[in-house]
Length: 199
Image (cartoon, rainbow, N blue to C red; front, side, top):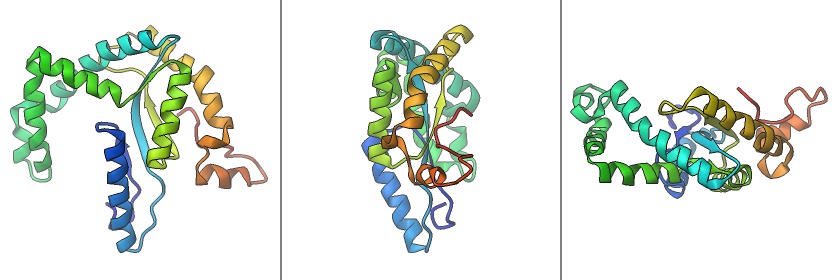
């Protein structure tokens, strides 16, 4: 993808520092091919609540249940994708998903997964997004607010709190502005004021 000049979409499934390393490698490969891709787009799960404990409990319960929805869709644990041309890299996932039948392994995997998402109070979310931006240079963040069977009302509460208390800061605070946002601010019509907008 880097050699073809495409930009990068990262789904947060690893430690942020490792993602930063992957981005650096991607840029290096792109540069060797004469390309200068845009900053990465990052997709993450968000659990935003009035208290850190509420946000964390929701994330542990429902992001923990997300393992099942992913397994039901892809059937990673049976290893069949490793035999499909172009999907050979999924073979490693068959071992990971096979372990999900063990409650201790599942709990450990869930804790790790929750730790690399945007979880907490609105202020926690802002601090985590700032750190993610510092490490990765992102200028677009794609947020998932409903996962693992999270009831609609809770998903809506999650999204509305983020929209009311986190999004306005992302839109106004220059610390979150990327190169595209800075360029957009110079436009006389002001049509594209920032990059953090509801989808």
